[in-house]
Image (cartoon, rainbow, N blue to C red; front, top):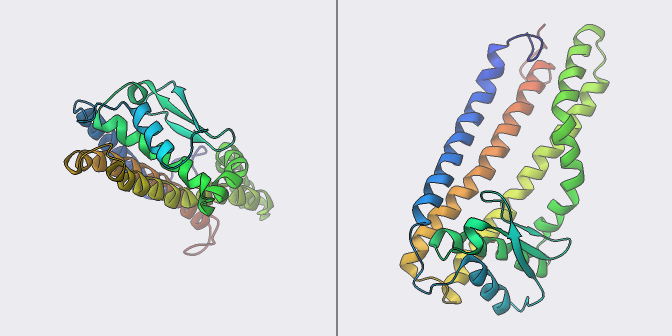
Length: 239
């Protein structure tokens, strides 16, 4: 059997570990963020002010900081060199808000220093967007047709598109880990938080990093399932 055309128990064996990891990562992020949103930093700096201080100390006075809508919708845009911070981060002087804001400032510093994985991730964005929209369905339809015709051309196209999503997610990992490492180092160097306060910040950012790992694992497991069904992994394809 095949997803959408029937129930394949093996499909769930592949995707359930990734789903479980994603759910656990999401729970950890919300739990850590909610907990440390109640703990204020001794400096009284808001997320926006902490990010501004970190950027200014790095000489990035022209990087703008604005507001974003949605829970943890914070991001850095390399195209216009701007930070967008969510309402829960921009105006809050909590440990969680300062951690998230300085992490995004870390991305701006990466950009200024020509951090190559960030550049590569930006290059991969258009292809990854196409792959995430079409790759899964093209693989699924291509495999369904190949089971009767033996022609894997459409499946291979879907496989290539979906592989671009995985590549993007893998490249994202060092980008996110490095931004977090920069934030952890600079918040102490710039006097934004105390060493004791950074313990809570670390927990928030480490939990957030796990969500990127979970996304990559889920995509990899899905890709392995399709490879197995196509007979490219572990034997022949099954009807």
